[in-house]
Image (cartoon, rainbow, N blue to C red; front, side):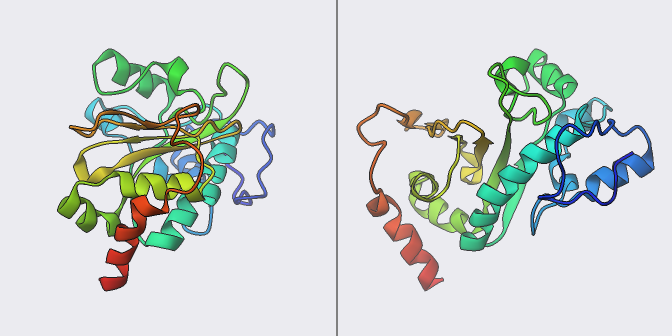
Amino acid sequence: MIDQRITAGTREEGADVKSPRSVKGLEDLGRVRLSESFFMRDFLYSEIANAYGLSNIPENPDLAIAAGSRLCQELLEPLRARFGRISIRSAFRSRAINQLGNERGHNCGSNESNYAGHIWDHRDAEGLMGATACVVVHAFIPYYEATGQWEAIAWWVHDHLPYRDMEFFPKFAAFNIGWHEKPRPAIYSFVPPRRGWLTKPGMPNHEGSHESEYRAFLASLDKA
């Protein structure tokens, strides 16, 4: 059962919190506050789990809470503070749900590639923790639909936040954003016609300010 005293910033990994197997345990897990605006429950919804009648519950809640708290506090809260409401499209996946999604062709990578990514409660091959969520920034939708310039918010995040990686998708410019103990900032696009790497370490455009790329977007917010 999850200790109701657990809140963001007070949970220490390694206390051997058990994966909840009761309604009360799930309620307690869902009430864990990861940051000022986000609770664990916000990140547990899964279309794959719902479609197959399965549950999406962490095996190692303490690690999921620790990684998710960093994701929320260092990335999602600053996004929300600057741009307002954000919606979570996809976030935590259990190993079983991610493997099912991979095997059934539901746009999930392998478990190994998602450890410390969408699979928050397992460390990666280097023993490091991380967490990923797919989000939509509501204030960006009008600008994106008018211009198609998904790169504007990508470069803003790149210049301002300690992200690990981002992947952009066509619908509403939703994007995966990851926090990781060893960030290696890189941005990839699945948005046609500009599919592929926008930037990654070693590319000429990786360093320096990219303010010119998002200036018009920020100006559009002032006019709204």
